[in-house]
Length: 419
Image 1 (cartoon, rainbow, N blue to C red):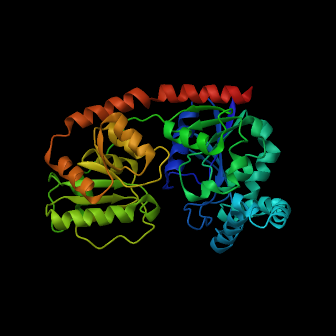
Image 2: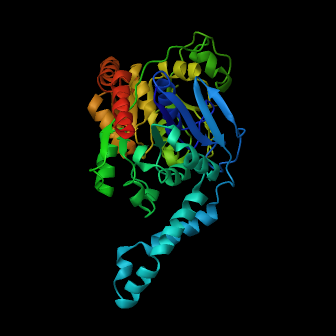
Image 3: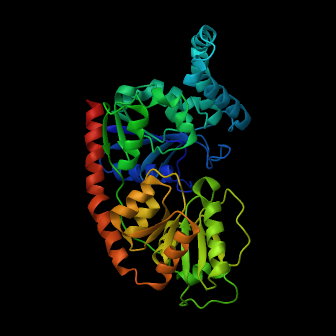
């Protein structure tokens, strides 16, 4: 049996994050055919990377998890200064204008750019040098190292250790940090790259010109939930609803699942929904599942329920009118696919190429760019039969996101880097 290690910034059933959830799903599935380790930090949340879990080895759903303490929390001011330096000295136009002086300056700062790249990664975090030391001392034990998410220190430093046996799952999208000079060499290092969607692969290849590296679009296997809450949706939401609610009552709601954050477009989602409710009075609510990293507006039709277990999430999803996806930056959006799998349509922002691809490819949801689009989409969801969209969503998942296909592509990548 081959031995593989996933390297990811956070890991645990309590962790709220798309890439981290993806890692956990893959590790647990691959544990049936590989000896799987996960190397990660002790952090629960990404704002500070504060140590929350003990630095120890634990077993989670059959997967060996080795947690390493962060040496310091996220250093925001220091990271911003390092980012400023990187942007200043990596602009092509800086070599023009004053001729020789500018050219000489750029030659002199080559080492500084590398230095500030290392500093930026440390400040960005989670800074886990013990994890990197472990990799250096023990990578020979593994047939493949699988790094998930391009943005954080464990990947930036870890891919240097044994690139010849490394598989990179960047979960990349068009955002400010990916243009920093630290990432151009990073995307040239791995032996193989696995993308989550065709849109992600096109973006990365265009930006980094690394098509020569072996790559594939792997996605993820999606299945409807096997267990649901023993409570109805009305019972689960009763604490957030005014007055007493009968357990079998029909609650009319839209659903958001994920990190409640401005980076996920939640501020815009709140503005659109509140305006819609002001112009279109009705009993429809917006239920919010996930940890909040921004203030949630006080509004009687916004129902935050916090971070919930999988059976509760599955019950709320299955009974929703639609899932809202306002995030402009997604590399896969598993919750969109999970929604399709149970026949719930998705109303998504057209700003995100991945979400556009899912909606257009499946015809199982609606896109919006403006308030008018949003209003039209919600009106259609609330007043028209969605059974055709439901059937299309299930068919889309069955065609492209089955575990047999995903695991076969992982096997090919592991066999390739294991050589």
